[in-house]
Image (cartoon, rainbow, N blue to C red; front, side):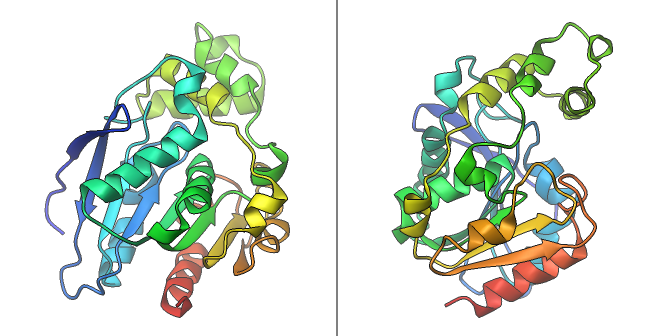
Length: 260
């Protein structure tokens, strides 16, 4: 791959930045859409851990967006602007913009929640979904504590004593994020999915989480709700360290090769 170009489009009321990477040697004709997690962006979640290289080397066109409120995409400051259904609509609009009729989708953490809602609302657009860093907390609404939003609004990281708050504030500062936009996002993008709704999603779904991930929830319990669900344990990894793990990558490539 040569130098990466960042593109933009406007759809669903938001200006969204994205990259569109094509394989160099052969193209399976099976594009995959990548959706990053909270306080991250397409580069931190997917380029730096070599996910885009892994997938393009496997012959897959890769589209990765910056979610609204993140990276180079448009920022909003009301929690209602970050409803998961709106963020999933941004992802669907990107597929429309690129004239992609069907794609695989992989999300991590908040991005996995968005991917799940995309699968719920538009299963005809997806060949499969990979939910990384998210297990049963998709259903019970747990996961990142609301205190993370408060951490984004603190005057300084030095004012924070809670380890989780400090960790996410430090990460947000490292990614040069808009802290006010992230606070609104944390308060707005928390909608759960019911067990019945999950059970109605019939596309192949891989649920992958680190065995030390306290943020995701039980991957096997969530995977069991999907008629064509599978679970993948990423041994010895927590929420952050699982992202680029070789077991995760190998499991995803196997899943994509085996799904219909």
